[in-house]
Length: 66
Image 1 (cartoon, rainbow, N blue to C red):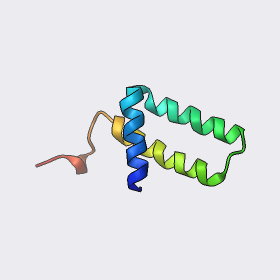
Image 2 (cartoon, rainbow, N blue to C red; image 1 turned 90 degrees about the horizontal axis):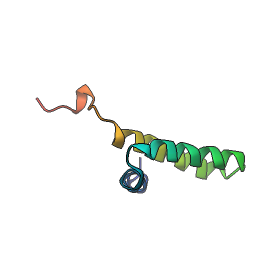
Image 3 (spheres, rainbow, N blue to C red; image 1 turned 90 degrees about the vertical axis):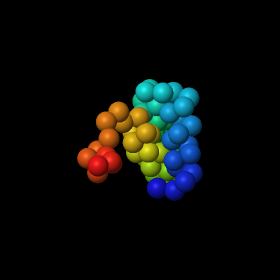
Image 4 (cartoon, helix red, strand yellow; image 1 turned 45 degrees about the horizontal axis):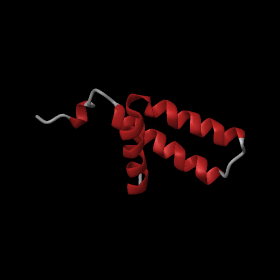
C-alpha cells in the first residue's frame, strides 16, 4: 500500500478510534450506491485494509519480537 493510504488510515483511526472500520465501510457502501468511480472505490478498499491493520489489538506471530 502507498504512503497516502496509510496516512489516510492513520487519520481516520485518530479521528474515529475503534469505530474507524465502520466509518470506512459506510463510506465505501455510499460510493457503491452512488456508482462512484471504480478507482475511488479501490482506493478506499485499500484504506479499509490499512484501517483494520491499525485498529487490530493483537499482533500477528510474524510481528512479535523474540
